[in-house]
Image 1 (cartoon, rainbow, N blue to C red):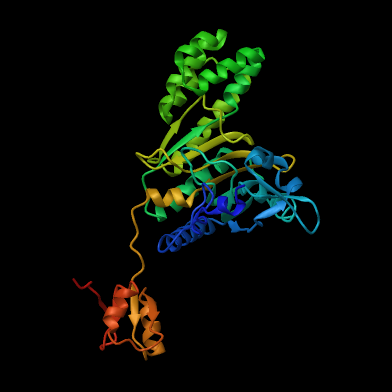
Image 2: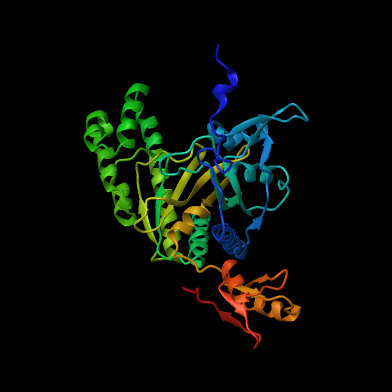
Length: 391
């Protein structure tokens, strides 16, 4: 007869072990991320975007209504022990901002400019985005449908990233409804349409030519035109598009013109046949990249806010932004020996130092300062003297 207790001799799990896709952010990275978020928010505020702060959890029926339905499969759910109603942890903040705009701020004049920052939690990670908890900082422009509005969010985001030290950007513009409209107006059968959509998604020109039917030539030309905005828009202008698809193409061209009217050197690319996007997007969409990097810095696009109100927005991912910008110097830390005056400590903080005050007298203040990770120590002359580690 075996002893049940003998089967439980495995060592207890490491208390630092976290679920896949979740991680602790330690010093100094946590402070760096917080500072980055505030720098982005300051840039948004300078353009009139007012900050809102939605809750981390909401009742499921409101969180997943409207555009929130697009992230339903990424939403953690739980029961509220108080009301016994199902709740969800937000996977994306845009649907929450849309709810606030149509309810709490429904009386405010349009266009309504809102900004937000916070953490989101997702059920699944991906190879390109292995974290399931991610920071977001973004803007929404609600109540106006025009190329100028689409251009504004791109330009404000570019300015915010420039303030972070990232001045070279590549912005990929798409119109996710262009190809579906073209296929709708061509009357393509559902099965043939599904096969063609897969070929377009894989950027398989040979399969597109084989499965495109009467649209094969047009779609192949557009597929091969993806790249710099000028070339792609020229291909769209020359393409034999249906009337509905032409409306989308013209709107994309006007948005590019509006962006370049303010920022002529901003690098824009266009993919005429890309139509994945987020499922709630209804018009011009954009994805931001740093040169030489495949990780998205942010993405956004046009959508419907509430029942029928036009809106557009863009979400930046601070973690990805920090991986792309030049490394920032950590804040210098100055050790304050026991007995340091309040005014001296305040003066150092005013110079940009973080001060670490001794809680009791140390036999060797310099050694104690090094032990605590300080870069400087308050010297007898009242200044912060740099510390060099001893051999």
